[in-house]
Length: 237
Image (cartoon, rainbow, N blue to C red; front, top):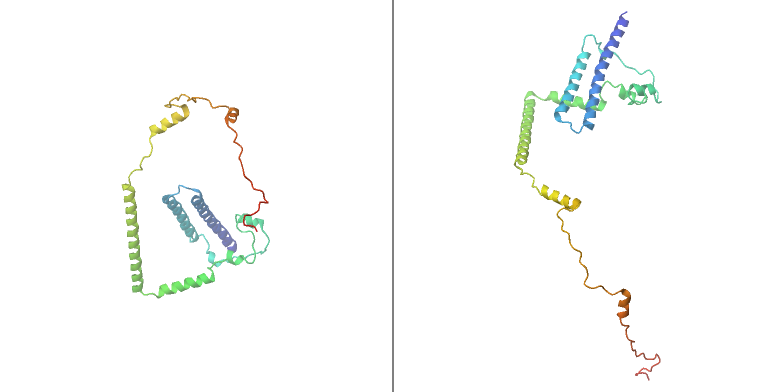
């Protein structure tokens, strides 16, 4: 009887958590879609979406700590069937993200702790942080605050200079007149303002090509004095 009540409580708790997770997933999908497709996205709209996701995350944590939600840490998830073949039911359940439930993927899908290398680095940082004295921590905090203040001053100064230049910039010089444009269009489309020019006729007509050829005299016969090839060379013996 106790096992049945615990099983029922586990089912109700996981169902409630599943609903919270579905809401978070939907909000994340909408935010990603907005980032990829909305050209008019501004910072305020992004912050609104981020605040919604943050509130849903807090609701999920409260649901996990609720008295009706069983402590999930004492339960172990074990795979019942492993196969390298494509699983259509799994594909549909995971919205086409996971195609197989094979041996090489199970350690990543069912992992409850970080990767061993990441966990080792995290522990190292935790040890260093806990080993620092109170004075060292206060000095580091003071240095970080000073860097933050100087960075904010630089950002504000650059912003003020950009706004000053933008406000003092003269208006763009006008390089055209609307009246001239309209006059040019009227002249091109309707011929408005164009003067009529009388055709200019030649004073005399040129003779026909045949007459020109007749008036041209044929060149006179060219006299040549060609010596015979067998002419004796004057210096030949």
